[in-house]
Image (cartoon, rainbow, N blue to C red):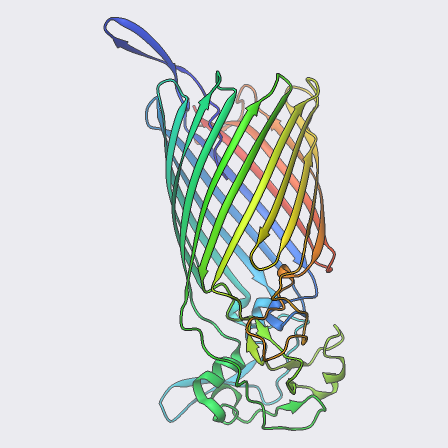
Length: 470
């Protein structure tokens, strides 16, 4: 969460015996505590090739500290921790283990239970089903004496069990027309690294080759074909390991804001984003329409594999998701705010998006803050989003093995989404409440419910406390 520069006070300088007054950029240190809870459910898990549970929960906390270094400069730190559980991600390895064995190489390998069962409709006990994300962002900003020119620079770090990111960026802002007009330019770059994790069956095939059904994790396990017959013919020959684990992202943005009148303000923005490297997710399975399908588990569930009633069998992957190594994104947006009266304001937002993967999207958002009194403000929220399908997407088992690129991740499908919510803000005008020498400035709470046309639903709750140093 970014700290808004809102505090102003007066500082005095002397030059040639003439007093010059200028406003401080930030009057005192501000501290934000932000916590959010997110949960979702759906039936199109990308880990399982486009079907299966998408249950996920995430609890995140951020502490943001903005400190004035002098009249002109502000240093900000944002530290975040997020803990999540994901039923679909746990199915990177959907098969339980019962023991360990030591092969000829001396390497210890987990062996499947004698009667293994897995299903895309339930999460497994795999380690990939839960984790923590740690992040740190630091920024420095400097304002000119007349406060009409601002520049800033920032660096960021984040890490979770299979992904890490480093970022840097900066920007400039110019105000003119008696500060009624503003133009900003920003640039950012992120350098990310994957820890390559493949679905278990493909990882074993990569390690043992054609003998993987008699060695390692799958030693002695029965494999069934799509007709329920025992088979030793499963060979995911399409699968080839990735030769890179790097993903780089570059973005630039230009925005223009204008105060039209005492009641109206608008802003325009235009972004350019370029990604390159490993843009696929290496543990998302693919299944092909032109291949025989193979399963591990209770064969009686093979005929109803795509139904949530399947509680005992899991299909072995043909390959992993394959997407191009480059992606160009182009968002263009507009914000329009209108002050109706002392009690009510309208805030609107529209964004058009397209990329070279074939997706085009439209976003519309509206908030209606209503001031109850000097202390309390409430606001209903509505957001609508719609997008077209990527040219690389097809549902479960509808891709062909002859294709160059393929994904069954429904984030790249055609869908529409509605989000309904409300928020409430409490402002402590006199900073009556304090803790650790910090006086409370305001409390902001938001709750949103999200529904997507493909069946995904989610709830998001956020509460934020802003404090000022006394």
